[in-house]
Length: 424
Image 1 (cartoon, rainbow, N blue to C red):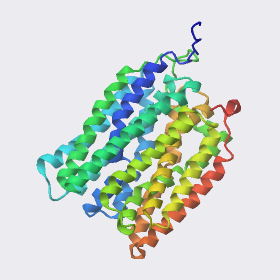
Image 2: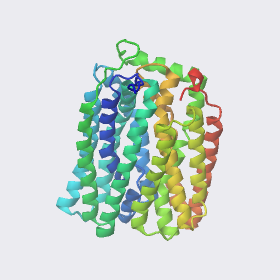
Image 3: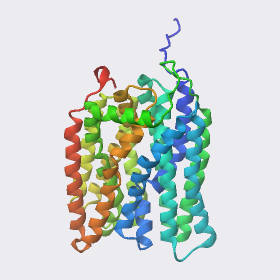
């Protein structure tokens, strides 16, 4: 028998680049249950006496920092012929505040002022993520052709989701052993900061030589931003896309508050909320990545529609709030929706923009979505504080409003279309 004919891969360093970005996300994934959309943080802050308003500030910090500092990131990164080193340094910088806070807790065992120090540290972390995210998203899309990007990203996110399960188990064991003590929190944050720093080093494996147009990257200045802004406003598909994507922050908001809801009114032990809930969310994400990423089921439009349906179902299951089974199902559905959106967001922006350097587009879209990315968690926290006397009903009202927002996002998603016959 003759040798099997190899199917050519458009991206010249597909395997190497996929290995590089996947290695980074393996380590960063272990820290995600600690820092972003984390039930551990919800419980930790409540143990420090934080109000729901302060808990709601965490996604607000991210929601403001990402669009504001992504503009500076796009401006700086556009001066560099190689984006790899800037992305590596941005990731390293984000790890430092986390590690410093962990060492602070372990070395000094403070009894007062922990909440204030944490908020300052998390603000610094958010600023670093603001620099990192758009540069990272554009960097990922510059490594692969459109045909290869979904496959590469699905591998990255599948590995990331498995590593999140490892991180969730670490949190579960630490909380089960030390509860929500200063020592336990110190171990959690030190672990998170160190693996973030180490993981960033694997960007050195990647190569940026894929350039389908064979043209130099344009410098991103004021004119470039204004051109991208006009393009976004004048393009029907961009307007519909933003109208659909804003509801993603309803998912972020639900994940920011449902941990305390489950603990206080669902009777769920805190170690299960901090560990198992997050593990189920990431497990749902793995399933979504395999089906819609690696197997590439459906077009970009259909993937957006499915992500909204999953999110809507997950939020609706939270409203009764009396069953462990419903909470676990909700965690899985919300996690799969969030993971699916993360997978399709960069290729979708790239497909609509039809340009190589999409950093300005990512930055400007984040800025347009800021009223929801920052405002929705903040208003939700204020609402829960103001109507705390309603008990579980305050959460049910909030989740009902989030469901309406997700339904609106679903209606927009059904009108989405992409060029090239909706290539997936």
